[in-house]
Image 1 (spheres, rainbow, N blue to C red):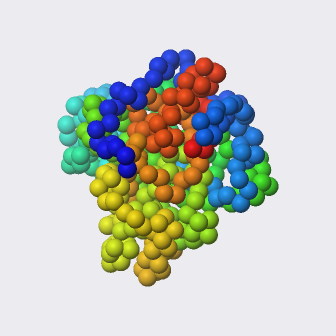
Image 2: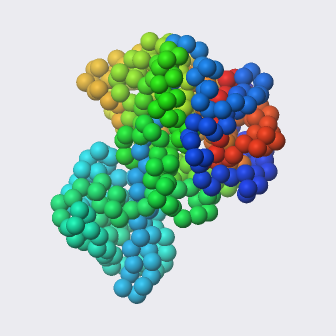
Image 3: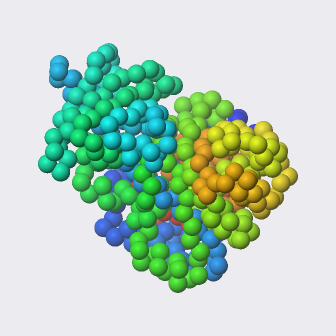
Amino acid sequence: MSIDPRHIRICDYNYPLPEERIAKFPIAQRDHSKLLIYKKGDVKEDVFYHLPAYLPKGALMVFNNTKVIQARMHFRKETGALIEIFLLEPAEPSDYEQMFQTTSCCTWYCLVGNLKKWKEGTLTRVIKINGTEVTVKATRGLVHGTSHSISFEWTGHFSFAEIIDTLGELPIPPYLNRETQESDKTTYQTVYSKIKGSVAAPTAGLHFTPEVLADLDAHGIDREELTLHVGAGTFKPVKSDEIEGHEMHTEFISVSRATIQKLIVHDACAISVGTTSVRTLESLYYMGVKVLKNPDLSEEQLHVSQWEPYDTPVDISPIDALKGLATWMDAHQLDVLHSSTQIIIAPGYDYHIVKMLVTNFHQPQSTLLLLVSAFVKGDWHRIYDYALEHDFRFLSYGDSSLLIP
């Protein structure tokens, strides 16, 4: 690695983004969005539905199939004060699948809006599910980092998935500066979303349609899915002058043994749809390195910490790391790997698995822009200058790019 990313100054990753360039809503047809093609320094423009034509036949494309949950809930105290509870991650049960199946009570780590007005006591709200009246109660617990532990109880033996589908709102990004609308329930999900757990969409995937997916198949592109539940930390601004002062958020990943085998078959090379797929794929490399060094580690111990890639110089090949991980899963009789990552990918990072990247245009001074810069070897200005000069739309509902370094 050529530079120590801890000392990167975030101000060097700024660019002017006028408010009118932020896409407040998606275009009517997802796959008619603009597509910027960056290939070894050359930049040009096309439309998204032509994407398959730019990809090498026989390549492997990896998608994040997470589904955005209606994570924002509002309760009103007897005094009239409005309290917002924003679900971050499950506490009890801690497994996402089990959590959404619970039928009477559960606990989440949450952000709380208007916290000063909720000193104590239980909040109550009555909702109707399929004509049945359901009473939902929320009780505030202990502080957990920047969040709080919140316990929920409800009547009627409905699943927690049904509770939040009725009570919650889809949490669109704060920079859209507007209320969630009914249309967002469809447009802020990828067409291939399956596994509930995210509080933000993996937005590069929002451009795909069934027609584009079929065209990928027709072009001989192999497709695989994995899951990374996108946390609210994806919008967390970098407030420190240097990256060293920024704490990356932890996100939970789920990858099947079959997907790892598919990566091995493709010689540990993948086209990543979105930065969340990047973070998962690159974390798999370091998880493989860990189990090769210590086969007795548990799933939880495979967690990739923020600076691990920079503190642990390794000469293990990506294919050997993935084979090691597959062998470890077989030894532990695991069909699916459940772990977490806090990886930060910034200039100075050496990519191991991701060879091409489909991604949107990200906020100035964000960790996502650092990830893109690392991928294109610092040439991000050329990409963003072109996008600004050619009327591309930015951020979650904006246009996208195919990056080939």
